[in-house]
Length: 278
Image 1 (cartoon, rainbow, N blue to C red):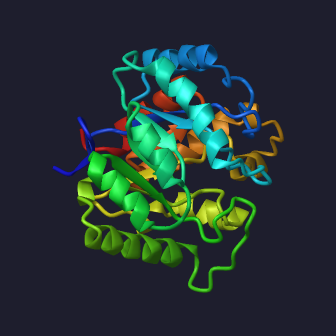
Image 2: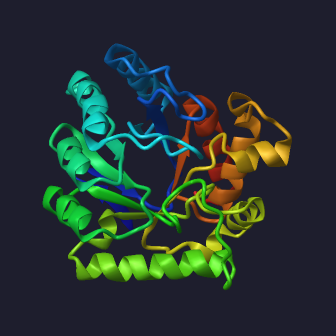
Image 3: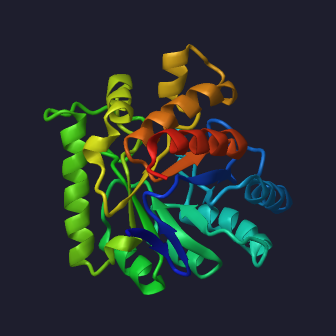
């Protein structure tokens, strides 16, 4: 049995799909920006997602939507600190913090987080040192160009490019002393990819899956869903999101990152019943 480990939390791989609920404490995220910027609102939403069945809570203080304004390190820390302080001792599920900054990761891991969700598209040795020291989980995303606004031409094709990046990332993390069970890979749906690239990844996600390593897929309410379903309103893309994540689960995804935990969990349970040996 393979596992994704993050401090005191351990997720067996292949048995079922785990649901990561999104909590954006930003004023400008594409779907729920501005709703949970106050600690009391963030705590209420976090507890609600836990009650609905989320397995992991993913907190983001820096929006990664296309065209989002980069904030200072200090502002990212300030946004996170109030929420992490307010959540202390209130959750049974692990907290993941969405950041590319080793400095922010240190603060997060010292204040209740167990997972760093790193969208930078790099294996930063400084981040590796932080993660290793804390025994934390590390989500590493394929993100060529380092921004959601960048469209890249993949000469070898998107599947080979993502697979190659993952292979290199696993080698780099091993050389940096990271336990493979603490690594989770993310193909980066919507990051530096065309609509067709995103569809190809969702359709053939098994081509980039390593059996012994956790795979996270986050297509929730993203442009790929909006374009395919002709739905401009991100909040109305839940049926398309469930369909996209069902395809990912069929191909071996272990974790799905969602805005709507209730629908995400129901979709994951149905997909598990169809595609997992249980």
